[in-house]
Image (tube, rainbow, N blue to C red; front, side, top):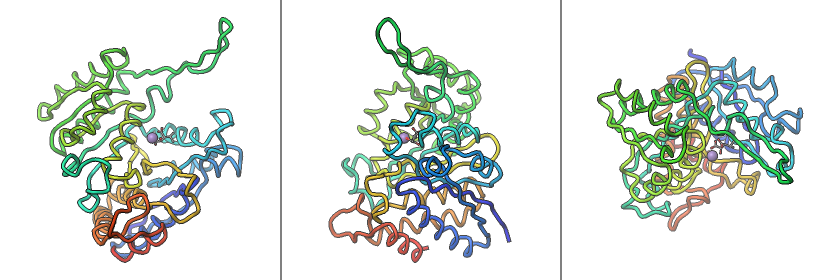
Amino acid sequence: MRQHRIVLLPGDGIGPEITAVAKLLLDAAGEQHGFKLNFEQHPIGGVAIDASGSPLPASTLEACQASDAVLLAAIGSPRFDALPREQRPETGLLSLRAGLKLFANLRPVTILPALIDASSLKANVIKGVDLMVVRELTGGIYFGQPKGRIEADGDERAFNTMTYSRTEVDRIAKVAFDLARDRSGKLCSIDKANVLDVSQLWRDRVDALAANYGDVELSHMYVDNAAMQLVRNPRQFDVLLTGNLFGDILSDEAAMLTGSIGMLPSASLGSEGPGLFEPVHGSAPDIAGQDLANPMAMVLCAAMMLRIGLKENDAATALEGSVERVLAAGFRTGDLMSEGCTQLGCAGMGEQLLQAL
Ligand code: IPM
Ligand code: MN
């Protein structure tokens, strides 16, 4: 029987609840499709700070490095807002992405027919949307040096550096071009080249690479315009290529096309080693432990992990099918609730998903 080593990182807030649902479904999918997943669970984020003082203990990173794939739920809690930045939960996630060299973050946004009315946008605007945000994940202003806070001239100043090298742009652009080639052949690169030097390099490199992709239709868009176009006419997009910060912002915006950020999975990949599969949403501390969370983004992450990380395509399709069937049957978590539907908690949604598998 095929065996895969999976590291589960439930993390903070709603993380443990949605991880339990994903694990249930993954075990069942393995049984149905002839493979076994060997799970190991490790702390990251706030729970790791509580246990060991570090948001990413060395043992967690080492276990991830030795795995076939990593499934992370969510990190973060307002309890740690007062800590120095290097001791906060978010630093654990950023260090994990950097430690596994996961420079490519894929965030697919598709509108499921059953959720067409769950969005705050009109059905005729979002119908048929199927796009992919390709976000650079280990560079840009998130990691650029120098950064810090200084006292200067009787004032206080804080700064970060938005920086990209040719190599960094080329490798993420290549991921986006290859994806565009496999999809509809359309790629839109998002930058702020009318103002930022770092964006001009970004644009120059994307243009240079386009020479190798004669079959891909490339366009460029300024990030402010892209933010507007995403809600004005999202169907114009297929693959969107962006840097770290712009991608963070635009992917939350794109999530709302689907009705809830609770529906969006993502895959973070490097050029070798295990991928990290994590929902786009956060740890939702306000609803944690109340059985209110939507586990579907996490289940869709598990599906991405099966397809991209483990090459278990049939099981991946089965998990996605189960999400679609449960929604079509009218089951909803609170974030997606609309008239005539049946509201379920996180665990109840997990049971329905399992039955529908
Ligand atoms: C995301 C999150 C993270 C990010 C935070 C939690 C560090 O918002 O994955 O989109 O900004 O990348
Ligand atoms: Mn984000």
